[in-house]
Length: 110
Image (cartoon, rainbow, N blue to C red; front, side, top):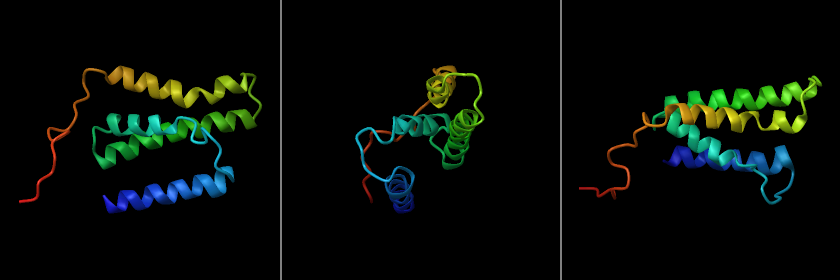
């Protein structure tokens, strides 16, 4: 948990200070939902979530690269690619995704 918090803080600091340069409203652009989808697709396991995040990140990077290459597709359509892929992947897995057995149960150290 501690390591996850450290990585979340580093990512937030990078996103705020380096990538965007300020803290405007809606600066993350809904990427938190993509992170939740990566956790679901990864079946609540770190390696699986990492793999799903790599796939979603690749699609995001591909969309940005295609914009720079001036592909004859509207840029707004390219910007939706990561979200469309996320929706398609999660929709395909509906019914097969199961939360952990201890989800929602308080942890009591004995």
